[in-house]
Image (cartoon, rainbow, N blue to C red; front, side):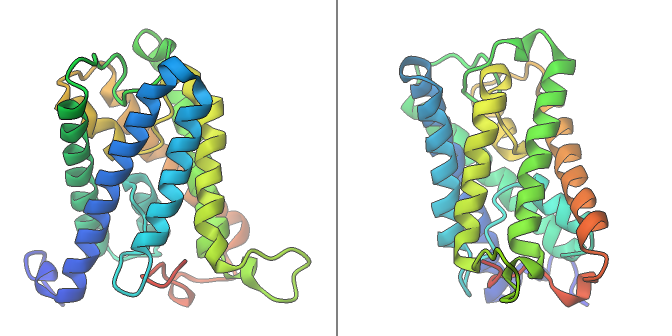
Length: 252
């Protein structure tokens, strides 16, 4: 068994780490920029920008030389808790994701030096700074919904079964996940900005040095992701043990 420091020495694992870091960087930057623009052009800009950005980034990072396109520590945490990925992979994925989120936040800071960070993810949001419980509930539910959709479209093999009345071919999974982000942004965006991603929240918070209620975003997104994964696992995947299907580079 490889040690923690030996794991990234393999070429495939290096590509895995790079895909998660670059993917999270791109998502943090594009989604953050879309959210900033939404302040003048409306919520639709931020919602569509974030959703479609995630969809195309998942496409780009999900090939044989990619990582499966998690791009979100909450997703990785959900997969880890349900036994769909191993601890070593999860640990390095999260490191890559948080590094990517920080790099994306730095690029946003350089590109938008005039912008004050009023909420930890450069987005619309009123109660986020003054109502921690409200923020927690919105982020918990939004992240749980996102991870639930990821499990339904990527992890659950039955969604691809040819005898089902409704099937979702694997190539359409990133689009469904992106649309889940759009829906979440419409619901949670006006209240919290709709982070749904610990790396997306923490990266800009560090870059803009504004940590107002950041602990709420981090705990809500992590617990929401785990809850969404566990609910789907217990409700629909008990007939599919973890070893029957692991999320890998060819998952989508």
